[in-house]
Length: 131
Ligand SMILES: [Zn+2]
Image 1 (tube, rainbow, N blue to C red):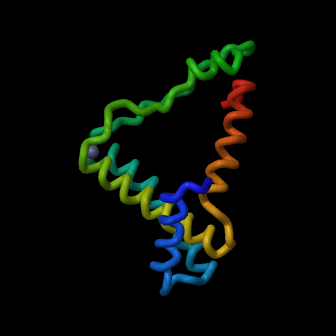
Image 2: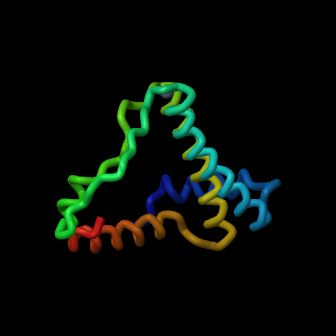
C-alpha cells in the first residue's frame, strides 16, 4: 500500500510546478534549496547563537570497532534550536523536499518507493552495524 501523504505531496508539487518544469530549473532549484538548508543551520550558530559547533580532531584507537566509533564520534553540536531557527530550518528543508519531489516527478520516480528502498538498505546495513 502506498503512503498517501507522500503521494499527495508529490501530486501537489506537480500541480504547483507550472513555471518551473525544466529539468535544468529543477536541478538548479534543488541545489539552491540544499544550500539554503545549510545556510539556515549556520545562521543558527553564527547569527542567533542558539547552537554552537564545537569541533576538534578526536584520536581514534587503531583497533576501534564500529560500536566504539559510534561512542567516540559526535555531531559537534551543542545547544538546541530556538523556535525561530527551528521554524526557518523546517521551512528550508520543506522547500528542499518540494524540489526533490519535483525532480522525482520529472523523472517519473515515486518518492515513497525511494523512501522504502532506502529504508530497506539501511535496515540491512544496521544488521551489520554499518550505520
Ligand atoms: Zn536560534
